[in-house]
Length: 147
Image (cartoon, rainbow, N blue to C red; front, side):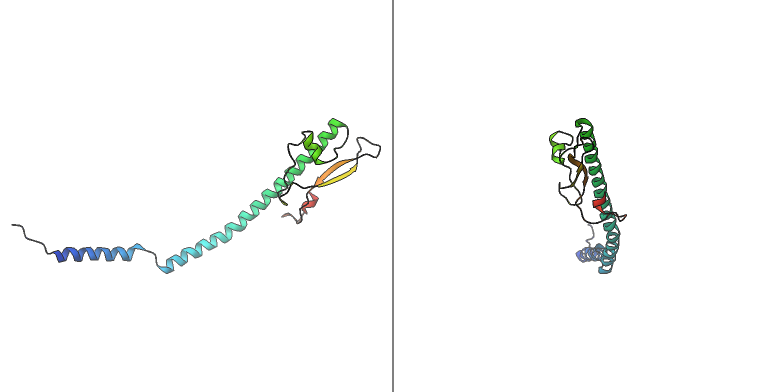
């Protein structure tokens, strides 16, 4: 016959294992606070960097859109022998696919600078330049309206 082991030792051993697991299973309040503090420090560095890169991307898109519209005005003038009346005329005659988006004001509205048309003469007027309507300045201190 086999000797019988007392059940108390088995139960006591299981309870001791559970107690050890409970002590090792979680984080203390201090550990959680330190982790949160480190996370806050990392976010305080990352968020301004992200915002700066987004603003720089908007400024780059604004410069590119203005360059494309000015190029379309020049091409129109070379093809037609006169300046366009507006940005809409550039779109209607397919010099631009659509009126570009101003990423700073988040609209498709631009300041159209009209002036004497040197190509046509006779005091005729036409669209000479396009400017942004955005208030404010870029990172270098240049006003968006001066681009």
